[in-house]
Length: 510
Image (cartoon, rainbow, N blue to C red; front, side):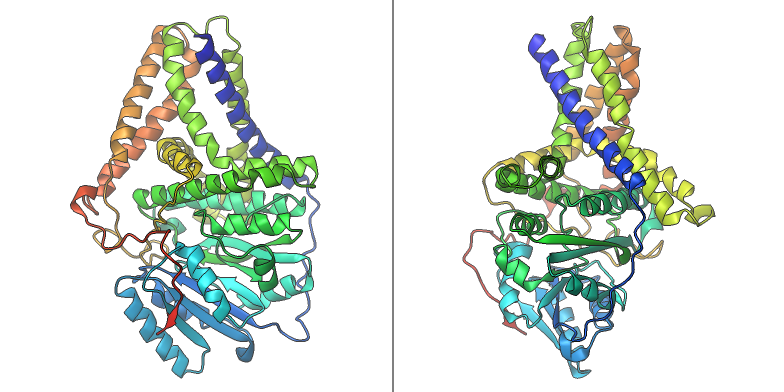
């Protein structure tokens, strides 16, 4: 029983650290001095820019992406566009037709197609770099629709700061109002970009490139070792390696690039699993270098917390699993664990406060359904999502801790904007998986824990435990309801399953 008590206490303390760090970031954001963000003057000689568009089986959004990118305002003799197409379906034909049409209009655009896709997105970016003519490399994933002035606002900023190796902009949302699920995701993304990225960049802490809607200095990519495929978060990996080499990162929160939010819970779970696996792979790869760097101690601690953020999910799961036996055998009697749970409750204020601040900053001047208070009505759902994803992300964390190749499983997009569009019964709609059985089991386990807490007189634990009940229960109910749109996973056969261990295959231009 002592061992279980100590494990429970350790998990609670570590979770409290993550929650307290969110509170710290919010306090630093509120205490920061407002910056007079003046856009730098246009360079005397605009640098050459290559826009790279990694695409894999994106038949719904490829035309929208190319239409937006070809509208980018920039000196035409200084701009190159590369479509990095790894597709195995009709996306390739769509991309080829679009590229040919724009090429006839005088756009410098290439369609580069790989018949095999070793290294996944990282492999695509690495294989295309020798074909790039730009000194700066802009990257947009298939679900993004950059504004025409994107390069005019970002290139001067990066060009003016010779120490900066990359520049990240804020993600905006094409379909935030599509459903409560997309509204909750938008809330989480806004908190990350408005508060976290702003504070990390302004205080000189390590902060990550988000993989898209940003700009890289080509010399920085090459100096930091190039795109590497040993993690699923090649963006986080490269940005940390660049900072360890002495490069700085830039974040422009006043420049926003809108993108599509996953409308299907299964798609969100797949996206979260990929991010969790890749982040922990990067932690395993670079934690020693970050801890041993010559950066100030606070920078190193924040870097490690950032890289290991997804460890909070196995900690949440461990906390639930340990609570039932401790309650049953009165392990909480005369134990400091009760007080630790109180501290955990205080620390848990951090994330909701962070989200509230981000909404007030972005939408404080708007009213009604566009106002920040209305947008916060999605916060309870976001809290339940964060709890309900614990099993999904715990499995992903353990995948990240293993030193084995991992498949890159793309997040499907459906060309949704605001409340229009439909994803059900479309190609790429995801099936229900066996994960729902584990989530059902955890829902019942959490219910049993609530019953034991009431039976043993530990009423203080019930609100905390109900988060697990409703969080995992929501995963089951929504998963079953939406799963009918994609069928059951065992009825589907994957048409392709690329291996990350195959020899490097370059591009051929179509």
